[in-house]
Amino acid sequence: MKRSEVPQEGLLSGVKVLVSAISVAGPFAGELLADMGADVIQMENPANPDFSHGNGLPGWQGESHRRNMRDITLNVTKPLGREAFMRLLKETDIFIESSKGGQWEAWGMGDEVLWEVNPKLVICHISGYGQTGLESYISRASYDPIAQAFSGVAYSNGSDDMPYFPIADNVLDYYTAFFAANSSLAAYINAQRTGKGESLDVAQYECGLRTLCQYLLQDIMEHNPEKRSLWIAADLVAGTGNYRCKEGSMFIMSTGNAIVKRLALMLGLPYGTKEFPACGYACYRATPQGKQLEEKLLKLCAEHTATEMEDMLNKHHIPCSKVMTFQDMLTNEQYIARDSLTTSPSSRWEDPENPGQPLQVRVPNIVPKAKKNPLKIWRNGVDFGYDTKDVLSDLGYSDEEVEKFFKKGVSVSVQDRCQIYKHL
Image (cartoon, rainbow, N blue to C red):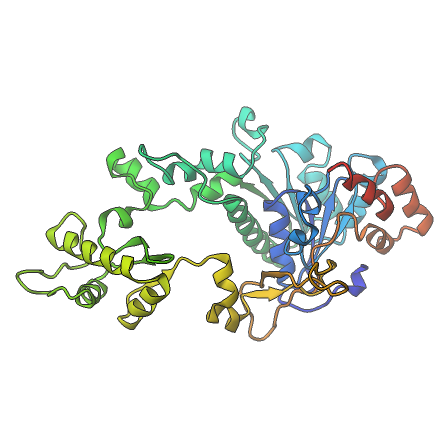
């Protein structure tokens, strides 16, 4: 797809982004900008395709990855690839790269070199441990679970009685992507005002560290391991946490004077009497009232399904939610009303149960929703290198010159791409 064919709509229409990254954080930062309407190109090394293009997974699993983006292959360490990269940078507003700290400097393409080509360029470096600090850390490789361990996120998700474990698959990659996209846009706005670019140093572990808040502060200030917990409120407060039901689970949050009172009365407890004194902001599990409330709530949940409990609690205006399974989401009225899970726009995969018909792939919709500039998914994720020929053509290379990229291994042609898949 050529630049002229990219839809010119959305909040970031006209903003040009180049992403040189594989795995999750870097590409997802680009995808977030693409969802907002930016023209985003993911640039990959021909010999190292992104995981979403293969790994032996069903092809449809990549349809929510790299959507609304174009994809090229280019080996920037070779002279021909470097020349094309620099030509591409001249018309790029934001460049996002993900690698070990100092990698681009080692290739002779540090920030100052890139600014000689484009003084207004915003450069966003994503790495596990940052671009500065101890060399022994800067040069380390990192993945999501590693960053969770180093940042304290895994520590906050465990205790002496249970294993320290990542809170979810790739969650810190996604945290990092949001920090990278947000800071890149802030730097872009500044570049438009001042005419000067910026270099951003996004360390993955620091993105996790930034989210710890009270857990970190409590431990540092009080240094009392016995008070550290997976979730402080759930340990201390009755009527708060995850409750198993007759079928499914409920998450309930019972803090605040009014909510504690409503929950107690719903459970038939004589709130505000000598038998069950008013609890104030919270009804603590260790108190006699807390033990009564917890016992009643556990019994009620065991006798009802999560859906029944959700209806009951909501009627009494008590914050709660059934723990949604992915299958629950497909039939939930709110999910349907907001189109939170939408149909992928143009599936390339055949429905095995309906030969000849495209497979209806459900993917998360764009977040947030914009009132005046509606945002849409206009393209699924594509195979790596899918747009190489068109992008090089836009840069002024002739068909004959483009063929040199393929023959010299600087880029990968559509035909060669199929051969690479066999080795993934």
